[in-house]
Image 1 (cartoon, rainbow over the protein chains, first blue to last red):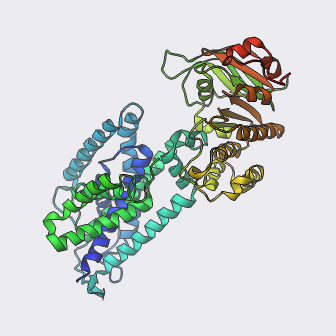
Image 2 (cartoon, rainbow over the protein chains, first blue to last red; image 1 turned 60 degrees about the vertical axis):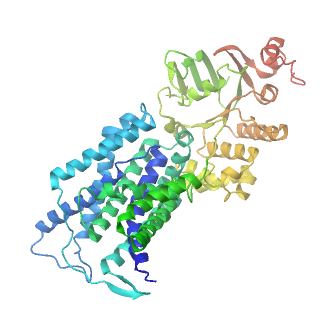
Image 3 (cartoon, each protein chain N blue to C red; image 1 turned 120 degrees about the vertical axis):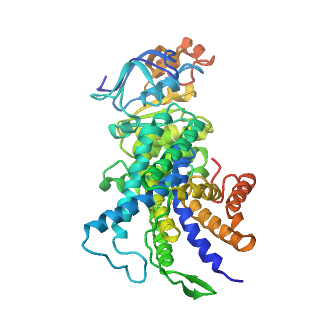
Length: 302
Length: 245
């Protein structure tokens, strides 16, 4: 059996996991399903594209690619700045919309508002950048064999390594840092967190920044692997929520494992039943988890 | 009477604006004393303590902690200001380890004090050190109460407020919790407890405040109140407390 689907699935799963971490944290700490999270993925990719062009125009002459990769060193500062901008976008959306609804609105009001925000953000991207797909690089990369019949491009190897490092960093941040502890505390019991001296409003801001930055990373991965287009985040929304629920709401490790399972399952489905049914896989997994284990793989019934 | 640490003046508070549960409550708590807030069910005891810590809105009146007016203070600032609070239920983070529950509280201290304060709590509550890696959700009721008190004590509060610290505990555990509170007071921390367990609270406290229908109906020395037949009748029809004189 050709195991290529495994490599493709892991790559897709890594992108889903990066986005799902933001969804799960938002869900656990702000207690609503943010359907605008997919747009952070798209905006992150477009911010990066924009910054690549700005930084590139400031440099004299073309910048050569980094070794076997398809992009130059300019990608690194552009990605870092774009992550900050995407976090700021998430913060801005919270300040303009969600924070106003949080204290007086119900769960469903927040969810519907996030749908509206999603539409507005996507339309804004189409207005600013048109609906034509864009690319970070037009270089053609040759996939190299790594054994077991699997071939991957240097970009893919780089992205998987970077994603692994990001996962470890986020996991350690949540486990060992004061802000991570505070995020876990707020997600479990906001009142107790508050009387323990935690500024819940600050933790909400940290959550938006972190979720936005990770969504940006997912957008860059998707842009490097496929293409950049306004609907890229919206198309990722169902897998993001399937991964979040499969992993268990509030669990960062669950989001990572859930994302990888969804990615590999989708890839396997493409191999077995064809690409037309790819999206159905995430939906079926979502339904199965809700019926059989609503708390997900790593979730805890409180 | 020594310096007033907590001063509550003409406080009105409740859940819905315009419908105060607590009305015109005025009292003070002196440094290093234990004061019990007692009263029948629905008297407004928990509402009073939750309003003091900012978890419920105050409609009028004021609350001062030492020289600082904390009437409108943010709840999360009160731990830094020297006010520790132990709620009646959900008073530990059940999905976190015992050590992380303490670290959460220690995180508001300067870095060089955090470990020392955690060690001090492990010395005061030796069971917690043995169980420090266990999830707090797996602790017994008594252990949870000790953890909740330790969490509130970590930032070295001037005053510790406890809401029904004896609820759901066996008489033996109530004795253990109350003896810890006595020791905490001996170390200079003022204690304000809201209690249903009238007899035990009156034995522990120096003074008591009796609430009924949201207002103070009696206050005074707890030993005298324990022998007051009117108080005994008000609080669940109790006979005067044995050996309280």
